Length: 277
Image 1 (cartoon, rainbow, N blue to C red):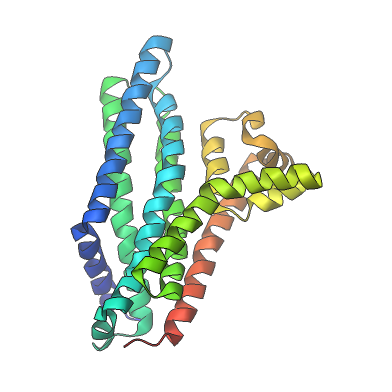
Image 2 (image 1 turned 120 degrees about the horizontal axis):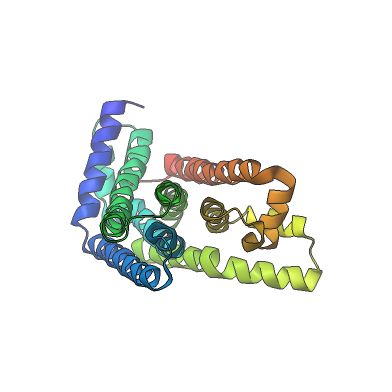
């Protein structure tokens, strides 16, 4: 896989994403929501005397867990399926490039586009809080940006796998939305129901949480915000007790990276054998 060709395809993918009305609307919505949560955090800080960054980081964590997976899954789902459907991927592959360069170049380009939206939203919110409130711990805020980018990478990899597997825009969008609902809402509800019905131990609940990258990001973000283990829930408490705070962070970080690599490997395996016409 050649670096120059891969970077050219990545740059092409960034341009395509930035020209997309859907992506522009999603990025603008993310920016507006981040600013709105910052203003709400500032209002609460002025009433209670709490530091601006502390309150804003907690609010933005919930925004990231809800909004970023939706953007990343949708963009990843459309990345290859759309071009397979309209035939433009066949034109691209007719050039002197390999399938690996096309696949990974498109993935890197989508990461660049989503990363720009995340940094713009969080960066603007951070500037507003820093200028108007100051105070608070900035380190968790910066860690939240890194964590959000890692979550976006995992969701983009899953979206790219969905894109190759479905091969059409309509099926890709439907599957991406179903995956978002499952990861953000249904997995937590299912884990709670299963824990109650089967009387699962904390260790079994913790093992279930390792299956869901959104839950992994939630625990990592909570650990960055507070050292109080009781706010982590039973799964987080079990992990903190058995692995320690640092060990739990490394385990969850590794699980997110594994999600990304496993989804990318599965997606490329399908893409390498896909019939493109």
